[in-house]
Image (cartoon, rainbow, N blue to C red):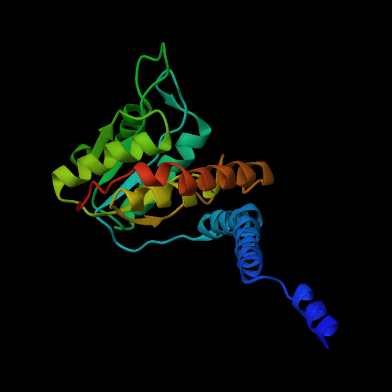
Length: 221
């Protein structure tokens, strides 16, 4: 009987060992979620936002910048401006903001080129504001958020390429903007290519895991 009892005692794992195994199991589950599920969630968000066309009325249409060539918008930027012009004419918002700085050697900015294009298309100058700041999406939207806070605007419709919409919306909302997405539907940049989706999935993940923690609301903050 004693020998049998000793055998059972040896076979039973100590409580500390069981706790360690449980913790290890949760760590493995969390690692799996970060390594597999989170990228899948980000990719799904990129694709979903790319296919949405939210025309809820807002305070302002925001055109995110893209390349310009000596005062002439690139095909990608022109597609965004054309879509913003459509939204303005459909009375989605009474104002349009163009945003984006310049590259070394440029004589003008993406924002100013965009504003001039919209005015030439028939949008009243008083309804167009150029924000010639920002060399990337986050810095551009931060500049827009400060403008919105100064003017008492709280909501915006973001116009950019389809794959870029999810990351732009995430950043805008982190800045306190009630953001809605209406990506370009036609023209250069409107194709939802695998390469673009992968790149924006990586960008959205980086925002979620790294950049988000350093952002405080500007609009309504």
